[in-house]
Image 1 (tube, rainbow, N blue to C red):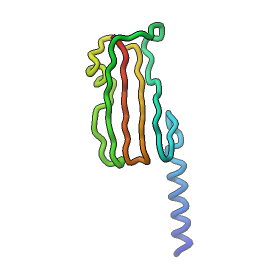
Image 2: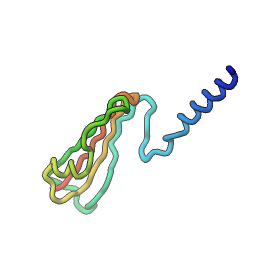
Image 3: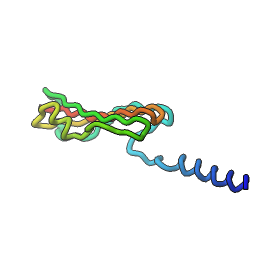
Image 4: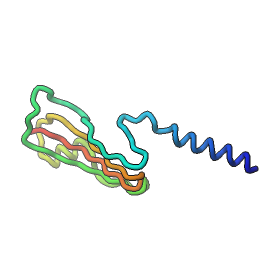
Length: 106
């Protein structure tokens, strides 16, 4: 019985370690904080006059609230012409997560 439990536990740990490895951005096991370019709309011009931010937060991976959509960031910044979009992530031990979309434009 103990041997079977050990095999099942080992398999469960292996599955947890293997899943989620192929992410579009680097993930820290204990702490993640990074900024990523999300979308470039106009590469010829990098100047902008307005910035819009939209954010969502997660607690314990059980409750997530907010609107981190591009549309919300555009609306919050009153932007009519999007220049580029950045995405940032902050996650501490899976306990607290903060996801932010920042839109730059005019």
